[in-house]
Image (cartoon, rainbow, N blue to C red; front, side):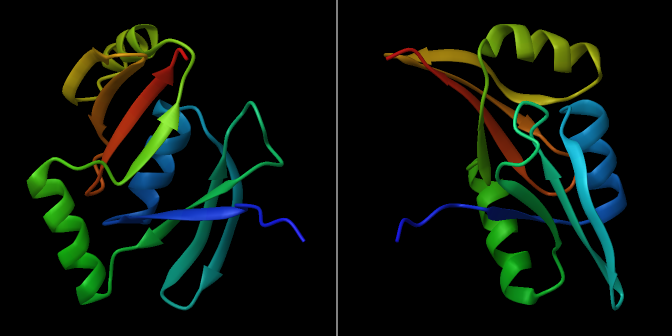
Length: 131
């Protein structure tokens, strides 16, 4: 048996705003949007791999999740990391769309990263490994 990552999550303060940001700004495709009580099961996927790993936009309603995401944000720690082919080009594209970055593209050996604010309580790191 081989383990596979099929689903991961980010806690978001507003599911509708998160869905719009992740699809309209970042370019992910909507996969599922299912009502579940007062919230929804909203997942998005990479346009490059629509049958691949899903990102769940999980409501940040539990006090532990709120404390966790607030601590990450306060310390400048990204909640998730997404691979891109060209960090500088993606930074320019997203900046033109009004996305706010907390870290401009920076190289650290074979890795280049940039960090953006997803407007829903998270920092997200873009990265490219040239190794």
